[in-house]
Amino acid sequence: PLRIKDIQQQSIDANNNQITIQGWVRNVRHQKSISFLEINDGSSIAHLQVVAENPESLKGVKHGACVSVTGNLVQSKGKNAELKELNLESIKVIGDCPEDFPLQPKLHSMEFLREIAHFRTRSNTLGAVLRVRNRSTQLIHNYFNRHGFINVHTPIITAGDCEGGGEQFHVSSTVPPPPTSTTATKNTTPTTNTPPPFFGEKAYLTVSGQLEAEIFASSHGRVYTFGPTFRAEKSNTSRHLSEFWMIEPEIAFINLTDNLDIAEDFVKYLVKNILIECKDDIDFFNKRVDKNLLARLEKTVASPFIRLPYKDAIQLLLSAKEKFENPVSMGIDLAREHEKYITNHYDGVPVFITHWPKNIKPFYMRESEEDSNTVENMDLLVPEIGELIGGSIREERFDHLHKRMSEMGMNIDGYDWYNDLRKYGSAPHGGFGLGFERFLQYVTGLQNIRDVIPIPRYPGFCKF
Ligand code: 4AD
Ligand code: MG
Image (cartoon, rainbow, N blue to C red):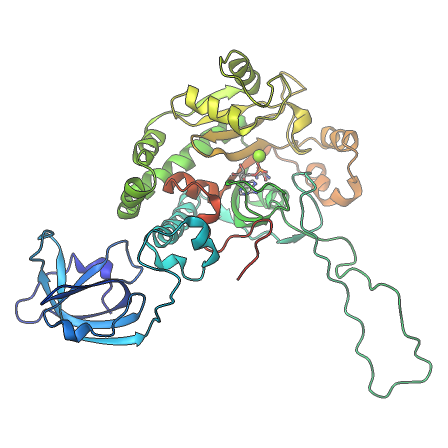
């Protein structure tokens, strides 16, 4: 069946221009001798206008209803003469929509829409997000496929803690008790002991697929994961979710410059193609959500990203006239206000901060050759969002890694397999993680990360 996105390209055949469209009513307007209906079917941001010469024919057709309309496709006679519209012949209400439908044809707050996540993708903004999210997913797979990467599925339930932040959700199931026999024997003593953990050891939801991706980079050279990750962060911010999706390439035989080059090329490829393939939706966001969106995205594609060592970033902040709430000194982690200052300073061009202090970064990052207090890593800061990517070269030398893990008081036994990768045929390698929802915030201009995932999870919210 025909979909609304294809209608404007449809040529009008004078002899047979009858079509049928199914969708949801976005608006009904009655004038004295004519009525109008706007239909959307999710295939694009565009609505199809249906014109009823006989208003009686639309009697009882309500906003929100699911309908099937049949009519003749004609060039519009109204102010949008370049558009096609449908002269109604018949309409069938497939699913009626009572007046108390929570999604009314008016501007609802994003907070309210989150409460009705089961309806919100029938609104323009959330409908567009879903399409951009889908195209972005496909572009991500295209990019890696073109460059010879293998997509690997790493486990969701893990035993390790990749980032070492202790922000993991526990998987607390236990081994189910043996079925009780119906013919109970006399000497069965009821067990009051707590049942053992399901996996025999502690298990968590993964915070990152990186450590496991390193396994496969050590056999296939170029791999990537694209999966859900979970963090029990208390952060109730517009940039944190408890469940988010991450893209993590892991690549053998690269150095930090290669890693930066790949990350930059990847982001540019995605933004460039989204601007082309999701043009209508991005135009909508630019008009309705953020007037600077297009300019910002075009700049991202056209400008070489800044590459700034951490120590120079701190110098820049120290020389700022601005008074920061979080004091600046060598060794600090950057707060949101610092990130903002840096991206503004470079006029909205994305900035990689490299060579961070070892002490505030995870155990797996490789020490810099020039300065053993820093690591071979990078964070990509983009305007409006802040950190979009985190990545590094990994410590591939067995003794260095072992030493670092001991210094950090880690349970080395639990990482036997990880250390084995260094012991047997170790290869220099590295990679990065791009937060998918932060990326979608970046390309849609939406202020809150809870609005770029179909159904969000954040502290205090696990509805649906
Ligand atoms: O910087 P992070 O913690 O890095 C890692 O997890 C590495 N293992 C990645 C790697 O090298 N393979 O997370 C990577 C990105 C961040 O830059 C951010 O975009 C996103 O993941 N992110 C979140 N997005 C939404 N909600 C959260 N709570 C997030 N935490 C991180
Ligand atoms: Mg990070």
